Image 1 (cartoon, one colour):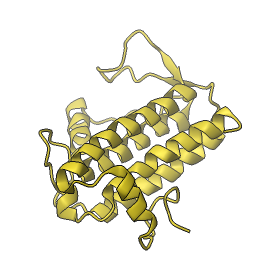
Image 2 (tube, rainbow, N blue to C red):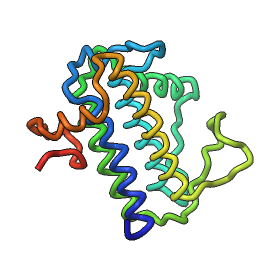
Image 3 (tube, one colour):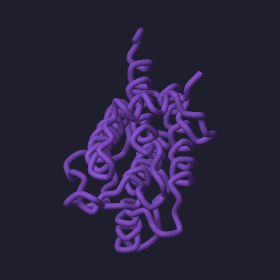
Image 4 (cartoon, rainbow, N blue to C red):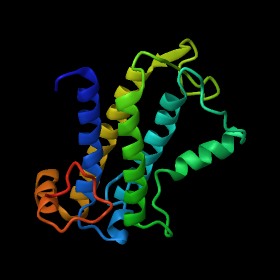
Length: 191
């Protein structure tokens, strides 16, 4: 990496690519499965990673202002957040991956153009955020998104291995030799 922005972009792209690899070759039924002790599924984790980027990067795009406040009651917002972890019966893995790819592209563009030192207001209305901090930097938010994607990609690795025993290295290798689909991440798309 030649500079900080390039490093942030490449680390973000790398962790985005993990979701395409871990999803490789799964049916919708397998992507919806919750084979481990937790209630997590591959599809639910892809859906959550999409929401994480959408929500946090909207804050980056609006910085130093806050994004428009959601006027809905907190219970309704919390229910929608909980739904992010669930691959519903009307969701398809291909559809979830297309939505993820769209958010990936938006996030990567913001990393390229955002002022890394700009203040991102901490959402005071969300009870799990610290009440004593008024703002984070765009840099902190990007690092937080990278951390979230990495953490949940690890969860996805465990879920995938519980489904069929496949591990990340063999999935990356299989994906590289597979005919690319339009929704595959360009990070892992074969030439």
